[in-house]
Image 1 (tube, rainbow, N blue to C red):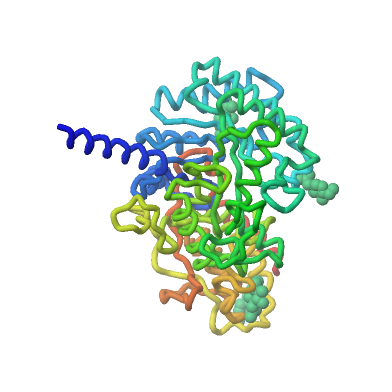
Image 2: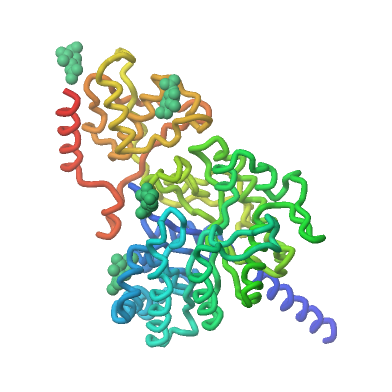
Amino acid sequence: MGWLSVAYGLVSVFSLVVHSVSGIGANWGTQATHPLPPETVVDLLRDNGIDKVKLFDADYGNLKALGKTRIEVMVGIPNEMLASLAGSVKSAEKWVAKNVSEHMTTNNVNIRYVAVGNEPFLETYNGSFLRTTFPALQNIQSALIKAGLGNQVKVTVPLNADVYASSSGLPSGGDFRTDIHDYMIPIVKFLMDNNAPFTVNIYPFISLYIDSNFPVEYAFFDGNASPINDGGTYYYNMFDANYDTLVWALEKNGFGNLPIIVGEIGWPTDGDQNANLDYAQRFNQGFMTHISGGKGTPKRAGPVDAYLFSLIDEDAKSIQPGSFERHWGVFYFDGSPKYQFNLGTTNSGSLIPARNVKHLEQKWCVMKPSAGLDDPQVAPSVQYACEKADCTSLGYQTSCGGLDARGNISYAFNSYYQTHNQLDTACQFPNVSKIVKTDPSTGTCIFRIGIQQYYGSADRKKGGLQSPLILVGHLILFLLTVL
Ligand SMILES: *[C@@H]1O[C@H](CO)[C@@H](O)[C@H](O)[C@H]1NC(C)=O
Ligand SMILES: *[C@@H]1O[C@H](CO)[C@@H](O)[C@H](O)[C@H]1NC(C)=O
Ligand SMILES: *[C@@H]1O[C@H](CO)[C@@H](O)[C@H](O)[C@H]1NC(C)=O
Ligand SMILES: *[C@@H]1O[C@H](CO)[C@@H](O)[C@H](O)[C@H]1NC(C)=O
């Protein structure tokens, strides 16, 4: 009996510990020309033991698919909706009724958070959302309470780590950015008063991208970076230092116990010299190992609650911030894993690929061998293809950066062809292209085969491809321009 209760006690302590440190989340974005069907993505999440998901909007089909699971969901409100939600309690109530209550009651979706805006205080937005974020947050919170969901569903605002900074360069010097300090305090106080978490996105990759002097090793968790000494506390990686800068900023303003969620963390695999499979693997695996013990950061002990950025590549994202934007996925666009990554949730210790994905035929569009590089059709064709499809894997030290000029041209043509569902008309760059059945891929440069277009919900067609008719229109326009 005694032994049994000891054993039982051990088991419960163990399951308690496992429960509190397990649970990695992932961001599920949908800015893709060929998003996988929602059911496929939900299976992918479950197969890989990802039990929390963060969305950027409230797509009906995606939420519905999540309803068959117990996966915790953070639904998102895009920045563009903040003004109307800030201006009217009624519209906030409608948003909650349609995008939270309905899914929870009729579809059994396990919604836990509403993300009000997405990095609304980013400096590139020039303060456009400064005045609307807090009132929108308040209105959504009131609407949740009115809907009887005040305890179950918490509000938060995913913010970029640039909302705080350190005057000394050390975590202990952390405080909110001076220009937005007065906007941050009421938000933080509101979160505290409503038992809601602070959500922050932390990106060592971006630090490296914008500052060539950033010590590369410090971005990783197993690096040999010389540690930073903050009054006797040593920081061996940027994540801990950045996270603790936030903890200090919160503490300094009287909110030292506010829970923190890491809304986005990850590393892209292409589109920049520091965006590659090795670095992404090293960073993401290092992060998982770092948080898996549940010991937290030097200043805040305990489990780190985090969402990987991101689940799947999105080929329709704006590349204004950089070509790497379309390559954040742990999985490629077709749900195949990019590298060995042990989340600690699968028997194999590896990622499980998406099931039943329907690829197109094994054929590619390439530059005709008989066409000359100096053919006047070539340059405008490539430009057109890259504008309409995705050439972010071409460029200095990217996966296809080693191609010669003909390879470059073929890559562009093929990207256009696959993106346009292998339509014959999508490989008719005047006299310079042809369809082949042998794979032109070489080394790290993969000429991808597309997947079948999913036409599930009206919502997603906007981000996706237009009908073949419009495509033909494009081509005619293009021919007119070129001829
Ligand atoms: C629900 O969310 C969707 C997707 O973000 C949005 O388009 C729609 O306007 C929202 N519904 C209401 C009633 O606000
Ligand atoms: C922000 O301001 C800069 C400079 O004034 C301008 O170039 C940019 O377009 C603005 N961005 C937005 C999102 O308003
Ligand atoms: C291939 O394309 C990339 C990106 O467009 C360009 O930087 C590179 O110089 C091209 N290479 C050749 C050999 O034309
Ligand atoms: C394609 O090639 C044919 C034969 O060489 C030529 O007559 C025709 O003008 C070319 N078309 C274009 C659009 O360049």
